[in-house]
Image 1 (spheres, helix red, strand yellow):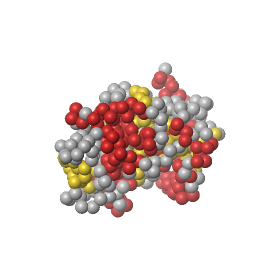
Image 2 (cartoon, rainbow, N blue to C red; image 1 turned 90 degrees about the vertical axis):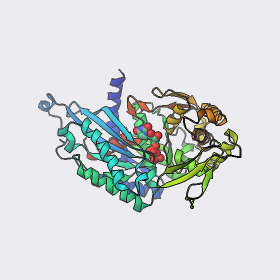
Image 3 (tube, helix red, strand yellow; image 1 turned 90 degrees about the horizontal axis):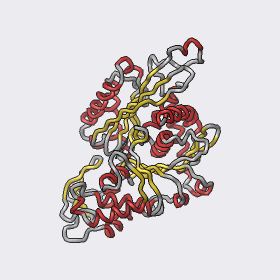
Image 4 (cartoon, rainbow, N blue to C red; image 1 turned 120 degrees about the vertical axis):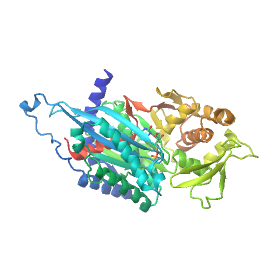
Length: 450
Ligand SMILES: O=c1ccn([C@@H]2O[C@H](COP(=O)(O)OP(=O)(O)O)[C@@H](O)[C@H]2O)c(=O)[nH]1
């Protein structure tokens, strides 16, 4: 039954993607133009892979024994790791829409942005992940399977020159592969699209895009470099009060959807660690030690994020604990994160990525099953972790800082109430909750399969 639901919703989703980017507009002119540039680029460059049959008008004889399987490879080059998603789609009938049948997922650490000094080694991580794709996809389909990489905050935070070297390296690896490499197969995705495409993935997987009720769920994505919040506002006031470039609009089933969506660059979990430590953008990294009362007093190490290494330590002769830590992380959030009024209400939010990982690390949820928590659960557990740093240190010396930051981001940043319920999910129906599936739908729509 669950599988049938998934198939149905996949079908509905396919219809949806037909509308998606074609109609999407941003109110703010700057953003709108950027979006158009991006969209135009995609439309210009996406080509049909060789030998992919374009679905024609249904012909009775064609229906006999018609069944087509095809794949899409989407790489997520994040700040903390690179992931590969291989999606398998099945089309049972030339007139029917393809359905998502299976996802293969694999990941490596660290992220591509850590290979600025040795791009060839970064390229090698992609090559290794492609080996997994080769094992998953039947050989005869390699030539028609598109391979695409989208990079997020890690590469956004590098200078364009450094990012280009890495992207060029990936392109070379793709060109050497037996897969179909469309133009624009390797690029940095903009933050607005990242939030919207993750919203598409989660609402698709949970069946909310199929329902006529227009009841959808919001998403909270916490990466290493950036964090995204996206939801469908119920109140016109939310749209009117939002900064103009926080609203993304598109048509779906003859209805116009206006999403509230924003990506905060520098507010991902790892970037927030650096900001808390006062290390973000700092010089003199060779000798400076960055200290925090969020860390165990005797802790000291070198920590690498992006293309820099930092000396980090606790405050040996000072105080550590939740209260002081909260004051430190507050500086990273206050006045930076916009609070949409509506989050004070009863909307449902799916939270994943580092929200999920830290809830697992701190024992709030089961690693495999995920679960439901309230914002106050993060706060309670953050207090416990910070006030018993020795106990939690083997899990991670940063756990107090991370849990306190998550609590602060949810409460003081986005403005959630203590009682707000968050659904923590790494997968829905066996598919990863991430922007990658939404991005794959977007890609195939431009291939004009329908
Ligand atoms: O399909 C996915 C994609 C990402 N993640 C997790 O989501 C976080 C994303 O962090 P990333 O490095 O991508 O951050 P960004 O660079 O986008 O800020 C990490 O915990 C990943 O393990 C995941 O669990 N499944």
